[in-house]
Length: 182
Figure 1 (cartoon, one colour):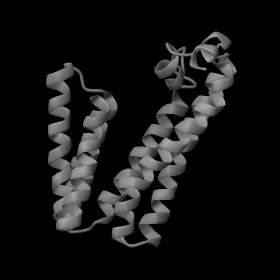
Figure 2 (tube, rainbow, N blue to C red):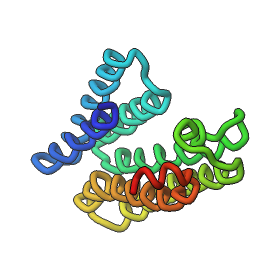
Figure 3 (cartoon, helix red, strand yellow):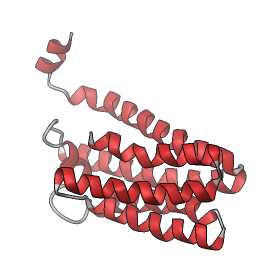
């Protein structure tokens, strides 16, 4: 349910954009993200740091978009979020005993330390790259194209990245688990 909840603001943003414009859509994503954080708190009694950061950035950049009537602010928010994720993954290499990737997946799979490091760096590179791709899309293509990229392109890139990652990690799955799947 938590993952579905994360997509609701993006979907509402897309729908509002299609029926109105970028400014109405920006107001919708601000409100939807506020509701999302509230519902997350009510259901799980915990809101992750990145959700708070995302909410803050949406309020600041979305608010600037609406107030100044400049759509570039909301477009930049995606790049900043992606870069923050990338920096956080990079920073986890040096802070704490486990990288972010190991903290997220360590209970499900056992990997050598150098593979956790490589995997974590790959995630960091992915997020930083998506931030740069967003800049190319926002400055090279129309707002319609950017909205499509934000709504479908970024999640599509994420799914593709995860599939490639799963293929890479398959060789580390114990043979007994592989035999059970067949």
